[in-house]
Length: 341
Ligand SMILES: Nc1nc2c(ncn2[C@@H]2O[C@H](COP(=O)(O)OP(=O)(O)OP(=O)(O)O)[C@@H](O)[C@H]2O)c(=O)[nH]1
Image (cartoon, rainbow, N blue to C red; front, top):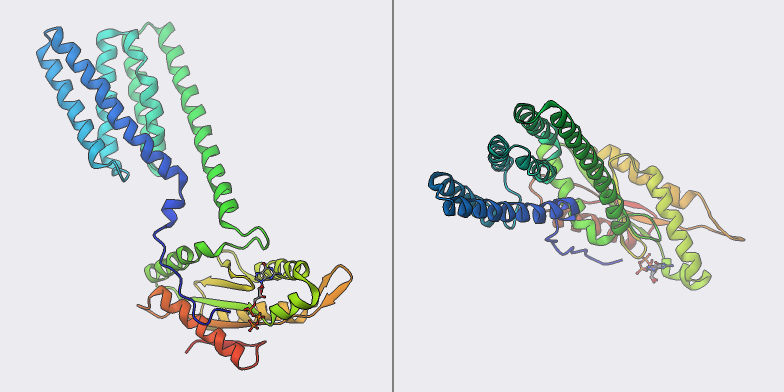
């Protein structure tokens, strides 16, 4: 056991695990600069055709796109800015359809595709419906009915394919994160995510004014078990221990393998009494049920350090408090739960 656990504050937040958000940022940069270039090109074309007013207006709009692209090159722009961008693009395409008819229609498809990257799930459906309604209204005005309904249906197909793509991306991202974040032996979260989970739990508890607790559990004399029965048996015991801990953990609790033979369970929205009960239950599951590995049956014990989160405490101090309590449990003879003072 480490005497004092000092987790390195991680610069990673949950958001950076979010591959989709990262992908969106890249896509948005391409959209702002790409649209800016296309609009600038149309502006120059209008100027060459001596259409001064349209040319200057398009050049102004394209500069706006470049400025937004530059300002939000490292973070996602607020939703209202993207709403302005999409309204602007929607208007340009509608005007283009009015003047060029069917030739303007081709621009609708990339604009619809852009909406998938521009908005959060919450308002995405609303925006895509608005843009679809706008385009449908314009195509019914500028195209013969026979063309118009076909274009309207093809837009719906594009929206359906895009929505299926979004759902698949989201489920793939969840699976990838689970595979990358969990330890292959135990199925618990890896230590490198400890600070992320602890910080997220603290932030949530402070925001919702809920009690929060964690227990640090370390197998007793695990070195001796490895020496006596071999590392492979030790592995099986660790895997079975994790299974037992996860069985006690409730929905919303988080179990992390924080070191070789050490686990941390975070209990959100849990009072001191409830956390003590859960921690004791975890230790009981380890000590009371012998481990059957092949033809062997071994009995193991574990020690635990329980700490309730105290208001304004830094998350690393909270972890240190649990570690100090665990150290006390070990010093006092192991196989017991101690509570941080
Ligand atoms: N089988 C197995 N053993 C591991 C693994 N990771 C770490 N260990 C062993 O776990 C043991 C942890 O030992 P410590 O926690 O330092 O000490 P201990 O022997 O458990 O004694 P106390 O913690 O003081 O009760 C070490 O012998 C490590 O080699 C693993 O993945 N598999």
